[in-house]
Amino acid sequence: MFQWLNQTKEVIGQQVPEHIAIIMDGNGRWAKKRGLPRIMGHREGMKSVREVVRTANELGVKSLTLYAFSTENWTRPEEEVSFLMKLPAQFLESDLKDLKERNVKVEVAGEVSRLPIYTREAVQQAKEDTAGNTGLRLIFALNYGGRDEIVQVMQKIAEKVQSGVLLPEMITNEVIEQELMTGSMTDVDLVIRTSGEQRLSNFLLWQAAYAEFYFTDVLWPEFRRDQFLAAIEDYNQRTRRFGGV
Image 1 (tube, rainbow, N blue to C red):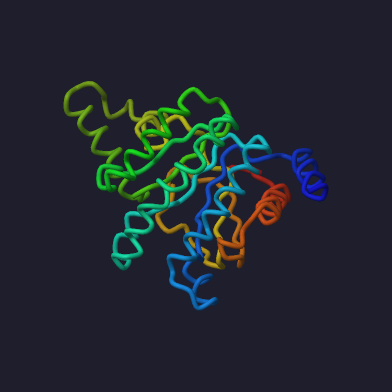
Image 2 (cartoon, rainbow, N blue to C red; image 1 turned 30 degrees about the vertical axis):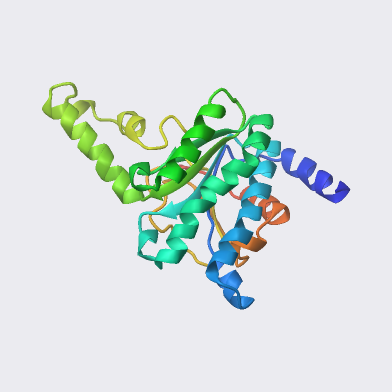
């Protein structure tokens, strides 16, 4: 306990990223290593979600986006997809009271209309119950794909140009960002990916344009407070130039 407090204070003394995005990878491999069904890895991974959310909030991180389910994940076995659809509802049902007390604001990015009704209802309830909170913005990327997001943005802007509401020369970065699923959220400062994979996997393609990347071999169910703090400490070793010198 005291060791964690000291670590947290040390990180707070450094620069804490405003927006952290995490690709939570390795649940299936964690389960396979133990001879367990893949769904058990996803269940264990929820413990990491809980710990990382609390740590991010305590550190003063403004936004935390978690890649919970991608548009490509529908191709997984039906049993696994069904379980993954239930996890957000289970997490929010068990942790919503705690999130409210911790001043966390729950949001979602993705095409939620395709999600099962119980998932949509749980997410909507969490959004409503935490709408007035001013602390950490916790964004679940559900049925989310970066390319799909950009296509939808282009379609919306094209409709505005066609109707005369917007002129082509009026299209700016700010105009595009207003139409993104993440809305007014700041760009991603740090992208974390677990399990040793080193790719973006169609995640926040626009928002992560100048993000720092942190890859770790740690599987997501084993990625807890210490590993999260290590990622932030590594971030503090970087020099961010944004194309400058």
